[in-house]
Length: 275
Length: 244
Ligand SMILES: Nc1ncnc2c1ncn2[C@@H]1O[C@H](COP(=O)(O)OP(=O)(O)OP(=O)(O)O)[C@@H](O)[C@H]1O
Ligand SMILES: [Mg+2]
Image (cartoon, rainbow over all chains, first blue to last red; front, side, top):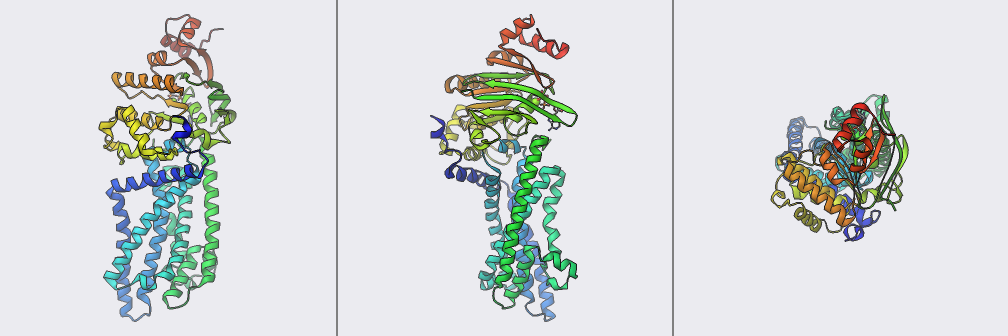
């Protein structure tokens, strides 16, 4: 059997799809075989929802209008960002933990295909988290995500893309600084929590921070969310701004990944993980 | 057309000149060995051939294509296995092979995995988790992975290091058969002199990042005026002597 019968032409679309599928299939199999990873999908959403749910109920008793939907909406959307950032980074770290990084890097999979595979896989876990939280929010607090939901979908998309960009930055840090930098992978997203006005309007921040916050896609999402949950129309100007910022974030993250990958190959770092 | 042509590869890590001007060719169906003491620069050389390490200078061409510019095409037809690699531990052997079949862009991943499982006699291990395997079993799975894409060049860094004599013998037999029957070229490193004598058509002796001698095992022994490869190795490693 000649090579062309066995494999798709390496640069064809079919080959690229097959290789991206390989990344997804592998991570899905790992998820199925590892209950701990399923635990992660359930654990954080449930904890956050329970804590903030009760905070909400308490505040509601103080007669703050819209408080239930605003805080629960914030928790839900924050989980979207958090999961997007973490799941993609986990996919990469698993290759390091299992000393599989070299195996992957000698396949014809391109960096873009590899990252695309990780991102597609993360979608399944994010979707699972959203469903779990939506059900819980309804059962525990009577917060029906679906009744306000459709307007929130574009916001979720913007957050996911931002999360993926952060994940690629985190992966780059680990490539550059070694496994110790895993801490960055888990905490990077929290840098944006105070800035993005997740639980409060950005207007409470000092002016300088407000200026910085304007350059964070998530800021526009959470501000927009409050507008929608407060009964307003979808603020398309905010959504557009967030989408444009997303494009810049993703471009910068990919540039950084390319740079660190080149650096890792120059320094011979790829073979120095997990030892 | 040669399978592999590496010209004047050099690599320095900080103060260490790991590879210092190595040139190497491997032809269709040839089994080439890279031999030398610990730290001589063998693994670094292999990693440059695989695009894992970027050379400071020199070029790598495979199947007539420049590696730096045609990475995806070249790597589609190459594979690699090494004693120091791992595989995703929670996955079943069959799942790992299936994933790699896809990562190599194969048209029928399942069918190919079934063939390879047969070829390497992995049927009994197919449904076991990678993490449960003994190191010899793990080596066999790594080799299975390395044969999935019917590579035209197979690069192996100490492939039989963890195998018992029986398993090692079988794997050597299999690799030689693959090379003879399919024309796959092999480039291997090993510290097992008998293995190298038995398998390799041509041996490249590396010392301190340079190739100091080459030839078949018999040629090398006669050049150095000794009986076998082991003595050649000791002479090169201890005395650094190279015949004129
Ligand atoms: N990524 C790296 N960073 C720094 N130094 C490195 C790196 N890789 C290799 N070296 C150094 O380069 C030299 C050659 O190492 P290499 O692994 O190529 O040797 P080798 O011939 O494969 O040895 P062995 O038989 O022990 O496997 C050594 O001195 C090693 O310390
Ligand atoms: Mg080595």
